[in-house]
Length: 300
Length: 262
Image 1 (cartoon, rainbow over the protein chains, first blue to last red):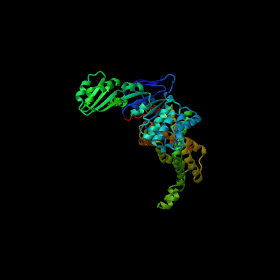
Image 2: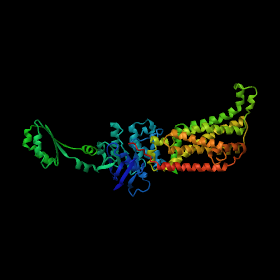
Image 3: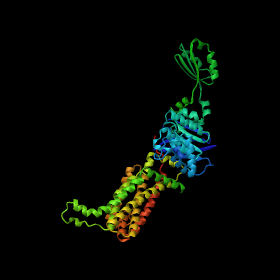
Image 4: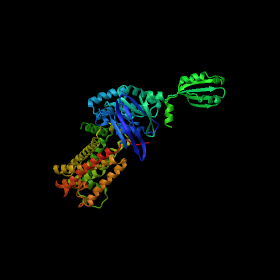
């Protein structure tokens, strides 16, 4: 069941397309990551979804069950959340809840519950102006959740945080995933791999690759064999080039890197190769390329 | 409506926390209090410290009660307005510039409520401060100079209150359109000074102008009725307030809230 669908979503600033015909399909109950380098158009895409910007072209459609003002069903945390510093944490969440349509007492109960969830029960009574970056980020998540939205949209939720704050927020997102649909942007593949179900890799305002995390891993992780010998292996490596299991091969003096179609064939063929033994094998290593390599490659 | 009240309450709370609800009324009270006191003692002061020739102080008679009240409004129109404009110039622009409105406006908040709640709070604070200051002025005028019919005072004050509301609406509207709070303040002063100057220099062709309202209020203090063209300028002002407020909401709705950074 898809919660939000975008069709050829485009946003132009001064003649350049920041978002260039993006088709998203955000599933209900899933955690979706928009992954891409800085300036790829992630934030603009999210701004279009929340309605903070209007698309130049294209269409955004929300699930028919949730009609009316889209904002009722969305919770949003901007990349750099700016709060009213004169409010206390709990006041802010209550305020956000009331604006989201809760009654005063509902908002109060919900705010206390959420501050507890994000670990700000005590700090909630203090003014936000004294909060650290991590605390603000967690308060931002609390305010995004307060009116029980169908989807929360988080813009670079961990990028500005130190390693501890990062882990806290990622752990929190893992817990939220159980109950809410999440859409978040990041430029760190590792974060996306840790918690998301679906990934969209975006480059120059376009979706380059998208799919489920496991599917992508299966499709793009290729087994690679690294070989090091004492003798020069370049001449021998020529003979491998025609082998059916070899996909890509790079040899340099005593080092060889082979990307294989199938790891079984590669292992069998190489380890039974008499000539390789004569070259005095120093190192034989099998490795799977991660999505990182893919990410680096497509965003080059 | 419930949401409007929530937004309005937030504005009031904010202004209490940053002490606007204290220092703006204090300024108006000080202005209101000094005007009658200074008018009353001016001849004495001149005599003591003026170094004027003998008998010259007699050329500065103590003004009438309605004159003192009119002079108080003159003070409000200068220093009072300055304070109001400086306090409110960032009403919309400030929140937009520092991004605090982003997380509010992604909630299902009506843009009209957001703007009109701000406007209502600004008007309330301006009118309460004006009333507080004017009560002091009236009290000391009665005490030191002479009493003025209460009905005249109330009518005049209501008319002047409308002029203040007009200026506050100009600030809000400009603050919605223009990014820089300093430019908002500068332009508001430009508009009010032009309107007031034109109205006093060319009253014949400016009968409609909101800038006429303060001279109408002077007339109310003195006679209990406005000058010629009072109703025209009253209706025009109310109309202009309504138009500016709608314009502010319209512009705010059209503008994209998120600022493109990269």
